[in-house]
Image: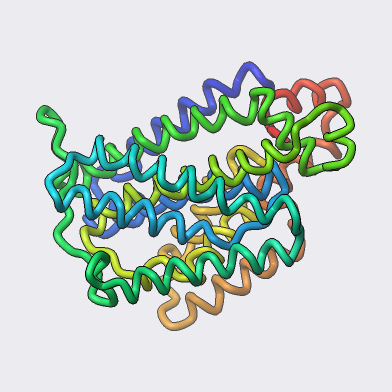
Length: 325
């Protein structure tokens, strides 16, 4: 697919996303909405891990922070449009602080630091029941009402989440194609070389964590009105690992990787439910096969096929738009 066809492809994808929930029941629409929300969270982790090369196992904790701040403010009578930016700011600054250990430790040591942070957030949410409701959680958060457009029904909320996801994707597209995006990739490839070329690796590392965390907070701010009930178990380590799986399966460092990975993790189990008790076994086996034969993710398969079969000049044209890495 040549570069000039990419806008048409993106438009077709948006149209398909708009048509997907039509005629479906509330449960299917809920699953499709969950795919959008986790795609947003995975976009943030893809920036931190795929582009900047910084391992994080704390993305679900930022979803929790965004979800609880949004829940508390909306329950107090604040509109979602006011609560959401405050949630993003909180996640941005907390992510900035979490990025400081990345200045000193790397690899599995950094993974342990972020793992500890995820556990810390979970314990605070569970034990500070005077604020968070503890294990009972918070319930009854209202869905946003914009006057001419109310998201109370499942289909309307889906389109609202789709609009937010498209805006978030456009912002991320601008980031990864900006000088910051090139600095992120330079940090991932070789931090010492990047620093020798004038890249402020300290600032770029902190920004990678901060922006990625803010996207996790945005996903959490959308989860709150979607389910209208949150509790600490919804944001445990297993959910951080699921988001990590989305990034890896889709293709770390590929712009569309989070969307593909989230579709595999969220939608594929639903398509396999006709196998009844075997669907989790089949799903797990498929994921293992994908990770074994496609270490660069599903989108990486397409990149390898283009590199093998397309002429060199065509490959150069595609490299401008197909992969932002």
